[in-house]
Structures are given as C-alpha cells and as structure tokens.
Length: 557
Image (cartoon, rainbow, N blue to C red):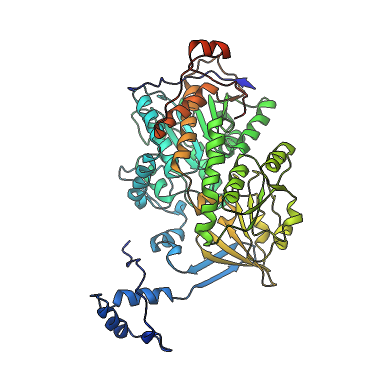
C-alpha cells in the first residue's frame, strides 16, 4: 500500500394545504351511538366546546381517519412486480404519483437557461430542491468553510469530473463545492432508489448535467451512467456546445461502488485512459480497483476514501447507528425494543446497526465470515450465529455485508410471519429480491418503500425499499455525517489533481493521515472544541511533529 502526501490549505483563526393535524376533541358518550353521528350532531357538540366552525373540520378528520385502505397488487407472468395503491398521506402527493407514470427519458425538459443536457423526474421541483440543499448546508458548516477557503484559489480549475453517487441534498452541497472550486461536473446516481427528485431538479436548474431519478429500473440506471460518461464537457465559452475533443473528456472520477469506473473501462477505453485521478468511497468499488491494480489496468492513481478513518467511522458507523432504527420505525410504525434482531456482517456498518439495536433493548445476534470481526462482536456481547440456525425466530433481519444473496429465497421461506427484512449494505443484491417475483407470492404495497410479501400459507414478511438501502429510502442520513465524508472526497480530488506527476503512480493509495486529521479538525469547530497542544519536549519524546500527524498511517482507531 502506497502512502500519499497531502495537499490542502492551512487552517487558521481568520480564517400543505392539508387540514389541521390537531386531534379532534373527545366524543362524549351521548354521541357514541350505533349510527354514526351526522355533521350537525358533531357541530352542535363542538359549538358547546367553543369551536366556531360547527365541527366541519373535525368531522372531515374523523371521516378521513375511517377511510379504508385499498390496495391492489399483482405479480405479472413475466415475474415483474407491479402495485397500484390508494391510501393515506403516506403515499405522497398526487403530483409525484403522476410523475411516476412517465419515463423521464421520454420527456423533453429544459431549465430556465434553455439547457437540456440532463434527465430528471421533473424540473419543476427545482425550487423545492433548492430549499432542501439550503437546509442541508446548515448542518455542513465545515464543508462550507472549506468551500470558502478553496473557491478563491480555484483549486480545481480545469478539472472535469464524472460523479456517480447518491443524489441527495447533502451530496449536492459537495457538488456545488466542486463547482465553486472551478471544476466542471457530470453526474449520475449510484443507486436506483436513493435519488431525491427535487434535488436532482435543483441541480439541473443550476446547469449541472445530471442523469438520475428515484426508483429507476436497472436498465435506466445503466442508461444514466452511459449518458454521464459518454457526454463531453463544453469548451470554454460554448456552454452546451457539442464537441469531439479528447482534451475535453473527463479527467477525474468520483465514484461510489465502482459502477461508473467499470462502465467507462469496458465501454470507453480511450476516455478511461485519459483519466488522471479516481476517488472511490465504497468497499465494493475499492475491491474492483484493487483487482484492476493487480492486473495493471489502472490508468491513474486511486485515492481510497472508503478506508479513511473519517469516512469509516462517520459515514459507516455513526450514520448507520443514527439511521437504521429510524428507518424501520418510520416505515413500519413498529416497536423495536425487545425484539430479536439478526445483523448480517459486523464491519463498520454492522457495528453501527448492532449498537443502535442493542441501545434500545433488542436481543441482537450477528452472522460473520471473518473471525476477527466475529470476535469483536462476541466481546460486545453479541451471539455469533448462522442465519439458517435462527431464521425461524428473527423479528428483524438487517444485511450489512456488501455481498450478494446473503439472504436467499430459502431463508425467506423460513422467516416467521411479520419479520422485517432490511438492507443497509451498499448494493441492492444482498437480499435475493428477484426470487420473490413469482406467481405463488403476492406483493402488497403498504406505503412508500414498504411491501408485504404474502406466502400461500398466509405468512407474510415486511420488505423495506425492495431490498435497497433502508436508510436512504426510508429515513435520512444526518447532514453532519455526510459533511465529513464529502469534505474528505473534496480534499482527495484536490490532492490528486494538484499533486506533481511523479508523486503518484497508477496504484491505490490510502488517504494521508494528515488529511484525515484536517477533516476532523474542520468539523471540531461545530462542537466548540479546543485541542490540547503538545510541547516541543512532548513531541520530541513521541518522535512526532507538534502539528501532526499524531498516529501512524496504519493505526487502528
């Protein structure tokens, strides 16, 4: 493993039109008759209680609450799953439902500047998306501080970056930071379920060439990646012009999972070989890049952000700990405490999930293939099991491995009635969802991102996000956590772009420890933290620099 030398700036001190959600007043016994009360009856009673509207709003609320849930679902003979639902406020707005009926690729959309190099669900959502981004910025003050420092230097002037990442308000703050630093970007999504349509619209309205929308098909996913990588960057002064100049191809990649990098390598070898730096933040993508490095197929140096301390601890451990139980409670209204939870995988994501469930009183068990991770789980009080041995008893099963088909159809056949099945790993293949698209099983859409899968014997399981990322689809990830990762990514891009040609070879590099510490120091300002400074004598005793790095490159935090 090669060690990178950092390049970064100094830190210094100068540096709905809905009705009222209030519950209706209690109905006295005189109105609890076999026949439902009329609006006039309700009105007379509420007038006695001082309600001037005659009870009409309250009656409408009661009528709304008693509205039945009607859902019809079917599995087609080809094995595809379709659902049509009519239900309460969980279903979202009618505008969103209308938009979902159309394939964005069949729509001709332009932003207010007349640009059309994008494909999003609905460009009209841009104003809402802009507000989402502004709110996210409030929790990402360290990244905004970095933007302020670097924008004057234009540290990425001339950089043409292909981004494949989750399209959220938080990642939009990163993208706009890169733009402020002088870069040009083309963007697509790394996940078919996680895109916030309003954020994608806001980015498109701002002139970003973005191809992404929520709940796209697998075919559309690869189409979006292809549109992102196949397009050229406009020549200076010719925004929107089509050019065929190798100098205007992308020269950097920011990837999450390796899909864009792999697609570029397979389908556009000339463009791939023009890349001068790759930043990867996901374990699946890193595995691919290490393999390419061993085969001598890397065209440029790679910065492994996934294994940086700040990314591993915050984006993996802390983000998972904050969001996994929130995702399940929001989507199922389920009481979690006291339940038997099986966590598949005890990496940083698994550790965060296990800690969250343990903290609210669950009985947590862990499955693992790695003996080191397994003994760590055991020392935290978790029982190490095989899924097939406990699958009959599990109340909640959460996958955190990054692997494929760790929950198979055979496992799901044995799950008990009402078991909740969720994925917290990167890809959508940890749960073998495709095996559930058969005529013998019935899919019932309960609400957005929640399906009941019914077996012929009357059993059903609760599947979240159709096997996609539960926290991205059913909950949210704290903006502060994403700020840590986004700051790391921005610095890694700048380091690779600004480094002398001889500093890095076509290999995979760990993020320099000094850069990790810099990211942490930027975010400590949020907590009004004051670090202790080493004396010269203490620094000499430890044989380190007074300003860091304070740990060796391979120190395990």
